[in-house]
Length: 383
Image (cartoon, rainbow, N blue to C red; front, side, top):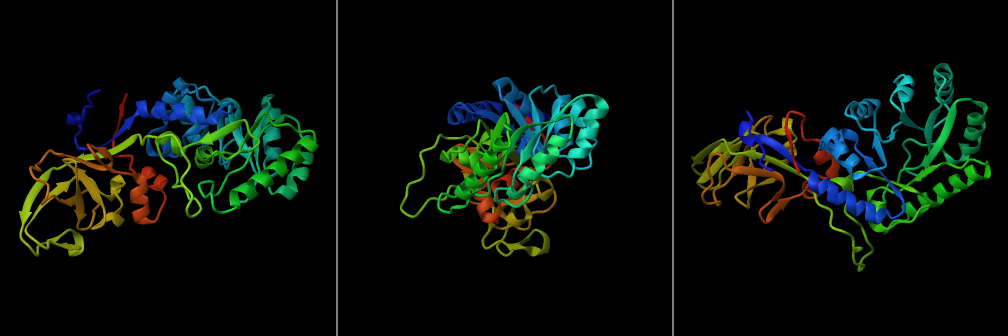
């Protein structure tokens, strides 16, 4: 497919490969086995574009979608997505009527809103289904294990509510050294046993995230929640010293962040470059200006540290990254000229820059790198 990059008024864009999304999803299906798959498309599908990615996954036959907010869920419904949608963060100040009107399933972490949901169900004459989230050790949202019996007792006092699911959120499934995931799994199994002892049998039980799926963790579940692997990423796996990494399928990063050189100049040694003279040329240098900056998601922290790919080779980012522009030292890349494509994140020829690499450089997680790419950067979809 030929992308209309020549029609961009500003030559900075992101390419999303829907073919790679499909292949990643197929690999997830294979790893999930008999378990169903929930695609996590919160935060605009980790910066990839929630609607196009979700439509692609819907066509692939994904079973559920997971989002963080009502607004994200309504965007999917407006785009024609019919699969069940779980509000992973629950419902905050939104009108519970949205749950009925748009067929949304909230997660619940306490008894606080049960009465509100029950009243809404009574008013509209329709049941509200929900998934109970238990805190097995992440410590954010989730019902403590010692409150499960009290929760069930109050739930049974109300009409119009249906507990359709039980889940928890793993904190460090990529770490095969620490015992935290095993401990969380044991706590979750205890919560499930409590429910079953109280004659409550959720239809949907889900624990595994991308790292748990990738490392083959075993839980009593029939549904997996997968975000990062859909987009070709996962937190780096941690294994005991001397132990080989698990054999896992290859997942393909689907996003490439690109721009073009719009200005070139030759500068003598000693020339200051960028705000606050953050860089001085140490030799006669050829400097390229690229119309991309921190407002687009190229972190200011990459100033004088990061790289881009030009003509298949790495060019160092020099000077302070500004809001809209950045500078590259292309002195050693012969033939570089105005109009040349620049890859800031992704694959180009035999070179690549991954979100994992950038995240390690900036001491953050790869998902922040992906989600930081600004809305003003057009997403172009390759199929």
